[in-house]
Length: 433
Figure 1 (cartoon, rainbow, N blue to C red):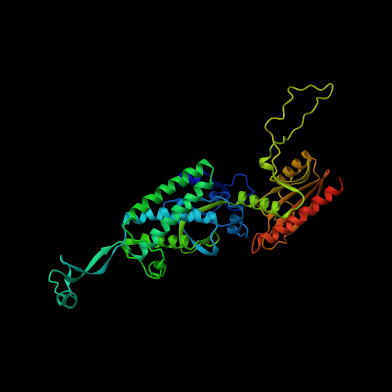
Figure 2: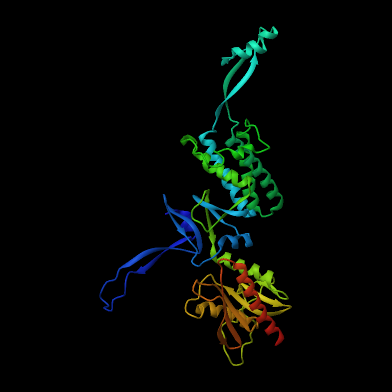
């Protein structure tokens, strides 16, 4: 298996008992080793030509969530085809298209540029090709010019419609990368973009003998439009031209479809982190009068333990400090210094009424520490479930809720409904202070 796939934890092997466990203690059972995906979706390469397509566990508009969050995708060096999407491409899509287009140009140039013969007509004193007797008599001899003839010859040229499309896409990519470099501050991203820019300059040098077409007449060429197959010796043109046209026309693509015309590096997504960020961003946008905080990135941090005094006549070995134990709920809804709701986002559907016991215990602990009376877990909704707010009950002074949000068709509408329900809970809590 590929080392990077195992090292990054995209998959894991688990031991699973095959069939029912026998009642007899001496009877043997078969234990199988099964491969499971861990928190990512996309085409995962396993070994050689073997890859597995991991799809979302629950119905979801993944592309929409990535667009909202501008979420990073992890690209692996395995080709996957994506379907084009209507509308203008998002910024992250253009980043991905530029990177893969430049990569496809590298493979194309290793095969060599496609050239074709073009007929040229000229009047010259150093003839080559075929002498055109009629035009020579009419235009030269009739005027007393006996040192020049009209000729026709064929010349091999790189200025073809497919090559002009590639040149225009490389030039556009270079402009795009210059703009991105001016707006990015993160060092790792800057290093990557500079490497892409250097590659674009190398490709531009390789295409230096091609005449540009500012009017873009090449866009109507059958090769460029994919209506005519490329020669076998120039097979890399097909992918590069698709990506070039997508860049020049700002075409986007969808992550849901497993079939399409755009050949890109397989893009993997962390569904757990993406769902959490999507919920957080939409709540910030849709909830009014309250602050929506990321509990994983609180400044200053809030410790789990408070200082406690040792009771009289009680012997202790050591009184520990608060230490690195922190309160880290995914979402905090606050107004002023008061926490009105604590929520954890779980990319796990609720199948048997209550949420997972560990998830409940975790969010209740956070709520108790922050002196908050409302604790909630947020989950994707199954196809046969009714989305909305569900009350599990009370644990001490804390009410325990769960919200099941639908992520298909119009996920933003489901997020608005959730924001209304959470805002109503917080205002209820605020009015009882």
